[in-house]
Image 1 (tube, rainbow over the protein chains, first blue to last red):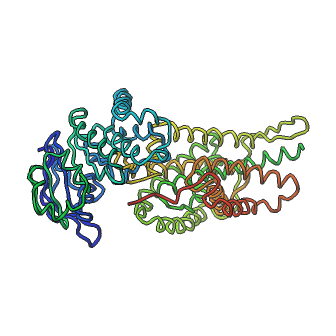
Image 2 (spheres, rainbow over the protein chains, first blue to last red):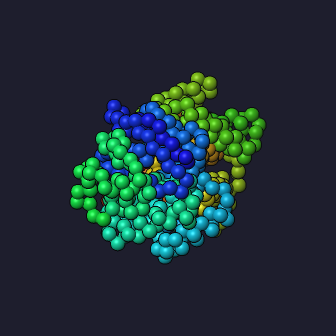
Image 3 (cartoon, each protein chain N blue to C red):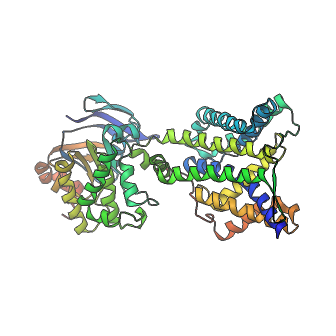
Length: 239
Length: 289
């Protein structure tokens, strides 16, 4: 397994968010964590990215114990988070945003080449190259956020609600992009989504999170048919 | 007219020293949210180091480099030893800086008393161009400041490190997600800001005698300049410094030099009334989720 989380508990101050979460991710696999708002999905990703220190449990990445390491160390190791709400650097140009994504890399020519790769994978970024990140629309910012994450050449890309606030057409585009990440960039994807339709259409396995615990997990076909899933979550979700 | 030009030159040379402080204040605030009021004392320590070195026969040029190094090392030690514990609550950093003012002033007084200190002018040439008398020492101060500030500016806008610094100023958490070691950049900014203050101190004592209390007025003006430009905004600090220099020069030229100390604050109040974020728009400190 590329990533193994065992019995991890996290929280902020006195509040416990994740309780005893265990999860695995294989190389090039797309796995989703589903669950209602406030279930603790974002905190799980933020912990993996190093922004939140776990209270207990362990995170083993590529054979090494990386539990509780700082975000810049995690990024350097290849676990890269595309945060919720995109968090584009609004005062900086699209190209600067991309180059920042490659901060940990030392291969200047490889980075130059990857800027072009991203511009062909996300054509809108080529058009907007010299414009400020803040001038992009929500959908364009999401493309930029994913591209910026990929610039690090991550082993694992953590995606937090990439469909948030996007039109159905753009969600469709994001869907295609996520499906292409494994083949084009050789990365695994751990996807957190409110939009179950998107998550179920790209992932091969899923975890269902409820009140900070993993309620159930399994192949995506099984999850899709589960009554718990419907009850918790699918009511009224498009897709 | 000729007197006016001379006064503007005088104004600009003092404003140069103030700009060096403002750049440090604004960079440190932008990245950490800490308002370092002890930055004026960093400058004063720079003056003292220059004075000690020159008094012991070291050349002025070597002395200001020494001042930069000593104050940079001091800034490094203070960041590692004190300020880094206040990063989650920048207000505590501000309070620490208030305490540091007293500590640094009195350490200096303890060893080298509270009297005025001066050095012989490093450059004595006075150029006469069409009736205008230009003291070369003032031109030197303006040139050194311009060169150093320009280098800082290019480094911040063009280099990979500058890009990472700007990203950290805009959004510390997201910068860390890019793999940027933000803590190390914070230390770096303290060191850079301190080195600039050390240089400012060396240049100041080339212009005027100083006392262990000189830092106070200088940091107030530096802070005013940083606010006028927009706290956290480097371009703003530089342009506001320039404006302050010209305003102080003009006012002295028209015979209002008694009010010199009031201009920076008057200008600050005016600018903030109409543009609360400063001329170039500042940050409200680091964004933390």
